[in-house]
Amino acid sequence: MYGLARQRAGPGREAGGVGAGGEQRRKIVPSDTERLLFRYCLGLADDAAILSLRLGEWTGRAPGLDEDIALTNIALDLLGQARALYGYAAELEGEGRHEDELAYLRAEQDFYNVLLVEQPNGDFTSTMARQFLFSAVRHPFWLEMRGSADGVLARLADETERQFARHLRLTGDWLIRRGGETEIGNEDCVAAFSLLWPYFDELLECDALSEALILRGAAVDPRTIRGDVDATLRDVLTRANLVRPTDSFVRSGGRQGRHSSHLGPLLARMQPMQRAFPGLRWDPMT
Image (spheres, rainbow, N blue to C red):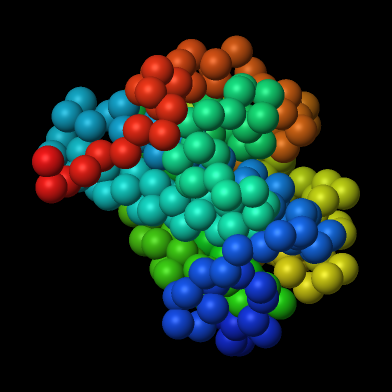
């Protein structure tokens, strides 16, 4: 499928945290590796949560019912990923925080998502192009994560890579049709990729945090999946009668908490209930 990454064998050894039976244990003093994993998982969770929020803005507004349902399902997949990662991050932190506190009670500079996911949706072609670029990286990323030395991430990777395989197939097929069928559609695709391209390489950056976890066998080295990502882009862009953008300017900083002007307003719409009523829980029995 679109020159995707090779399958990687089996999950690694168990890590502290969620046991094989799903039970959880509280940590008193997190280890150095756990502190690194906390921040690593937080960034991955923020990516999924913010992109899910963006895709949710299309609910009831997509060009057709099929597209509306497809984007809603992708948004739900991403939200599920975010919950799992926030939950694990909270446990790694060992301070008794809940996943909702990580999602709703942090300031803008304490979010560590890549800049691509916080960009406005734009038109529908731009939204599909953004999701395609994100999925083109995250599918091979989670395939490789199945071999992580951290057992929790390795198990999470099994389902997550399958979700991204679906997202990649759906968005890739849509862009091939859009770019190859009409001149106007092709022009829309060119404009979308040109706008998004400066944010793409941040998905493949390897910072000091990642380097430290790569040495421990817990994280994925994004440099090892570059070839698979390039093959996917080449396949889809060629079939869509598109040319890969040549702009070499890279916008980054999200992993360090430096964001565009778009994240603040997005969080303001996301967080007001928990800000007004910290610790609020919905009781389905009431």
